[in-house]
Length: 281
Image 1 (tube, one colour):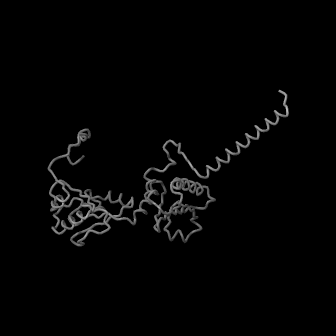
Image 2 (tube, rainbow, N blue to C red):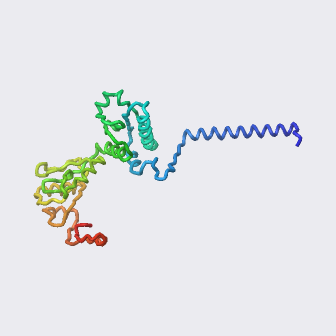
Image 3 (tube, rainbow, N blue to C red):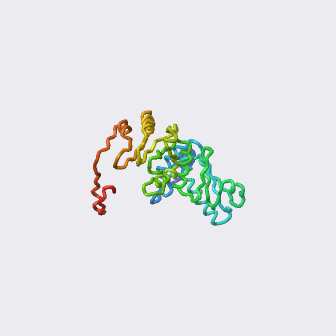
């Protein structure tokens, strides 16, 4: 085909039009990338994505979080790998909460900070939120999330366990105690205390709930009255009752509208495990 001046002008126009469109699309893409960010985790188990529980904890933290990691020199290969692993872990949190900061400090160059913060191992983290601190010796998502949860809850109300009548103890180690539950409460940042109403004749104002864990001897009439008034004012109550007598708590059951009837709960699946004792459900 013979290229006439008219055809040449048309080809140049097409070329310039394509270049201008390409530059416009590239510019628009660059502009959108500064305003919208999308990341996808295509790993088999979603190992680069935070769990729903971790995201929920971050959503409950309105203020900034400062994390300091103490490692060896950044020139050492082992320390470089450790810093990289910690950085990748914290990035997962930063995607959901951008005001989480991460600072690395050299153990050998910061002896005063190491002593002041009680750093004992390489890779230890100090997590700070709302003027409170937590040390983590083995960083992981579960450990960091639990620490954040404790920092959030440290100013919240606490569980109050009734004591003085042979109740199960939240910090006890006997088989009938609730030591494992008490340890889990501490791990997730839920504070608790014990209360003997014969000594302190009032339930604390900051009690999130009163726990009555299977008393073994009768409560005094005045103690029952204190608990009744607490419930009638809208206080929360967790009552763990064993089979047998209520030990003078019948008036409390009446206020709550609770009836304790004789009977046995049968679990058919227990027969598969050859367990015949009704206490095992």
